[in-house]
Length: 78
Image (cartoon, rainbow, N blue to C red; front, side, top):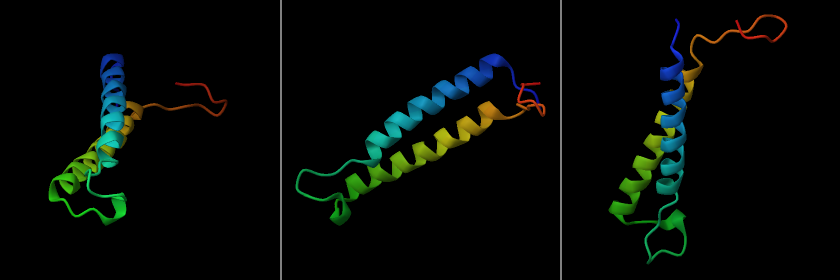
């Protein structure tokens, strides 16, 4: 499967964006809670779930960007 350079580049850009925003959302906590482990706010828990989804999508975009890339036995890209 061959993927063009533009698709590969946009996949990496999307992965970086989703990874950064996902990490930001994954670490969310409400002002009332001292620790994120004891969080009970459903809004914050929903935001964290969105962050985890974004991290998963970022991993998927990295996999898409690397699809079809092969190397020979000397480590050179084909």
